[in-house]
Image 1 (cartoon, rainbow, N blue to C red):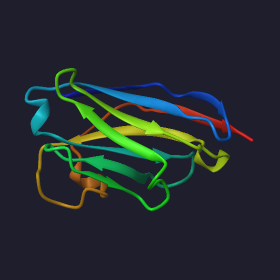
Image 2 (cartoon, one colour):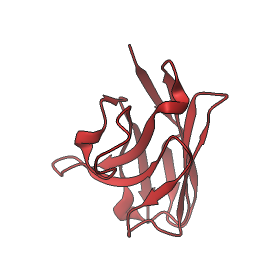
Image 3 (cartoon, rainbow, N blue to C red):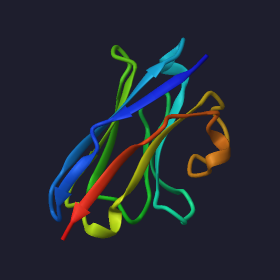
Length: 124
């Protein structure tokens, strides 16, 4: 069974940075595609970034140049470095994992497993 545990969220001021982590309990971690999504209460889950099994990265337009997704296959962990946060990015941040090498990396349907999320709150 695959388990994902996110951490690293917190309360920060506008312009600050955070590093979010997603620790995965999964066999063959290096074969999985991972992504970060975010969601505010009452809103749809929004794709933020994704990283393939070979390290190729993808970003939404809203975070391009400010966020960096990375993976450490030795530690079974995926990271999201967030810079220049703004209050509109106050959300729960969720990590997803999928074994399918095909499909739309920005779609929730690609990911089979999800963590419980970590809250990021950005004050103005």
